[in-house]
Image (tube, rainbow, N blue to C red; front, side, top):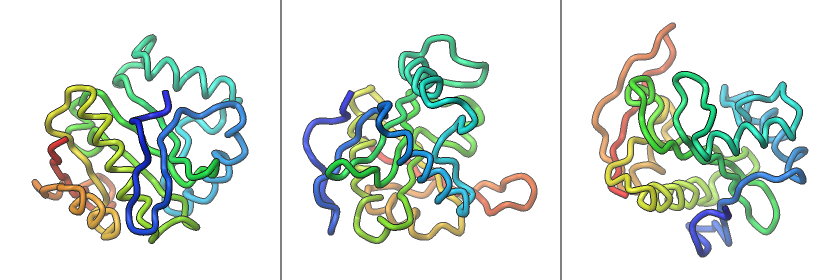
Length: 181
């Protein structure tokens, strides 16, 4: 799947599309994982797995087959601009109690070198289109309480703050937004 049809453009975003990762994306995805580790964000969910095994795991999750306990069908898509991986998004097709509390339907990230160019907004806008195609009328999107850039992106895409939920271990709270898709 290449994601929703057509490019998404935000201020300075250029041509952006969401697509499934391929064998050729391994080095870019591993580099993105290392970059985002400094932010406490996992670009890859199973970085210890060989790349073909990761792709197979993502395909199973997208199809909703052989899911581990507590997982839901989800699309893991790369944000691509002219062949360059600038970020990624996960679109969860349903919510578990844990996702309803803190995780939400959509999780996204922009690589540090590509921030402040409108890509976060473009990624989220395309993810919301995917949610609409899945039949999700209301979409939960969360971010850390101290991640003001992400809060601005979510609000720019129509997010309405419901509340801020505490996290275990003294981590920043989670801002929980609902967005109509």
